[in-house]
Length: 375
Image (tube, rainbow, N blue to C red; front, side):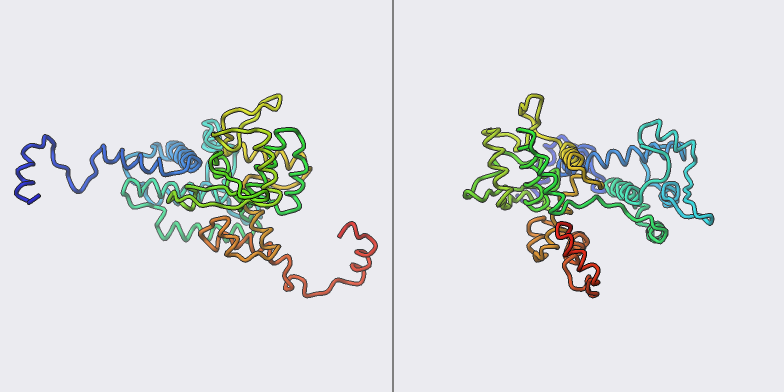
């Protein structure tokens, strides 16, 4: 169609031309809907929680909530010093948030307990604030060099004082076997065994990936092998379906679960009710974490266990057994080498000659010979 014809058509259009410098309201809503639909439910919840906290803190600290204007850098800096603990001259830890405001945040149920927040929590809330600014096309205070420098120095200060970032305990082979040994309680035990082995042996799956699996996502290749299919995940948002293998005990456990609780469609792992009754609805991500914690408690294992313990444990154990990093990442679908290397190196170095350059003492050798069951 020519320019002249388009001009003629404009006279027939009963719409006000849009301003090219601004998104129309319905376009803003459509864009927000796309963003919400493309974001994992757990991420949406964490964003909502962080923004709720920001709004409450701003109202108590400054007398206003998140509104129609960007926040100054000074406000973001104040958030950091209000919430991150810093060492004092007398060896104690302090932060600037007034006790009355701290108590009000707890009363409002946006804060769990009094005191400073963990470094990771503060970093996450700053990241959410930055995303909120970008979605509003504003310059984010989180990009300010002064704030980034403050965060770097705060992390160094905490690290030097022995306040390190806490990580969940990794489920390597031995604790995994201990968890599985508790799965003797009927149909619930069969479900939990299949879930734990799929999540661990299947590449250290995230809890959201486990609960999103459907009956139609698994198929048996042979008596010793199943394949399960992943679609959209945290690191692969293209929606291209990829198959991952389950072999050995994991395949056996999945076969036993599907034979014990057959279903033509629906969630692969479903909720259980009294009397070993299997419901039609799937598990939530939080329930996967509770299964891990419950089995760890039954096994008498000490540690800070969570659903992520399965993912970190798979990577650590792969390092222990000398599996090439490329093969591990093909299973886990980590996109960042730096993210996966911390766990992988910890496992790999356990069997490294570099970690045992000094030969064991004579007393140690004699003890091992006298007590072979402790080796």
